[in-house]
Length: 366
View 1 (tube, rainbow, N blue to C red):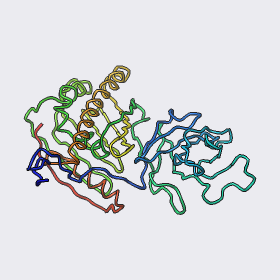
View 2: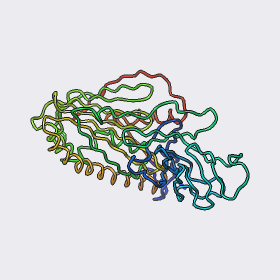
View 3: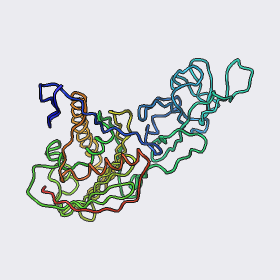
């Protein structure tokens, strides 16, 4: 095989080369959404996090629990079973029952003591808040306890605000999905007319601040976007206060303020189902000078259209990555936030997050 050219093709012929790079990360010791609360009812359900299958169920008090979706007896998925009246999950194969902590509580026809070595199912810490079920990505065990708490949606139930919740699935890595949600330049092309239009030749400044667990980009001097969504938020126009943020482990946050009355905030929590599949839980909170009953019915279909366009392009991106055996990135200063997101994800994966206080400014033409 010949040498690689800059385009990832062998110089001796049209033979795709494996570049060996993939923006896949596995982040321990953090919280991720695995389901909406209303999805988990009386029977167990299966979910997946970082390629690991989980069985979710509710105990006799209605508290959510998560176990590795594998019975330690004969390797059958626990999610195929049922929730017993004592609040345990019962395996569909031999009827072994486990509580929310993974302890074996009952073995049919067995006269010995339950809870012996090897009989315990692997358990994960669970939090249920804001209408979501969060799972800690490191299994529970001796000396293992959550080091943090899940992300809080600051405006979800705040007086004066309305909130729309939407979950979608994207065929892309965790990194690609986060970068897509926070990438400004693509909105004038992929979402042309919906969110932004062609450049108006206006120079603004992106102030980028990176700290230990997040990176924030503030766009200074940005006029109201010309798309449909911008006109809904502020029909009279105006200068926007615009922030994009990435918060570890997987929150992409977009915030707009136009004047004193119009405020729009999207918290997209990304759940890495597997290496190239990401589930996106978007919480859109807003307050406008118009009554929310007029705005709310418009927000969801518009947001779904944006998410659908993003999902389609991420799928094509992933197909191309697989076709050519790896990723190839070329970035400029206009790619404001992506490289900072990648550094934070890799640092979290390695467990070596350090105190950082870094600020820089980048001029952009919009």
